[in-house]
Image (cartoon, rainbow, N blue to C red):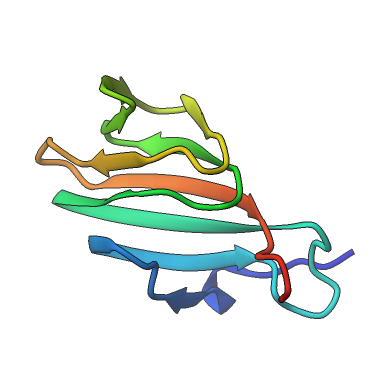
Amino acid sequence: MLIKRFSEALQYEAPNHFDCKAMRLAGFEEGGPEKFWVGCSHFLPGGGAGPDSSPMEKVYVILSGELTIRVGGTEEKAGPMDSVTIPAGEVREIVNEANDVVTMIVAMPYPEKS
């Protein structure tokens, strides 16, 4: 068992994200998960990511606030405790269109080693 305290979470720069602070909660450390990692992102009002895609699937769980997600010409809003699955290769754009901070968990597999 490994307990990683929130106070130990390291910030990281998420590519193509703006007005966002991201922290790695689990993964990329000795004794951590072997197949995936978990992060926590805080999006300021107007903050977001994309449009872009990833070669790996990902899951978002919105903890607070409301996030607008655009995929393939469709736009949906996700709020507290909603989960969003983004398949590998799917172009997505996310944006916080409200005045509250959005906090979400992201879980995704490790990048493939080349």
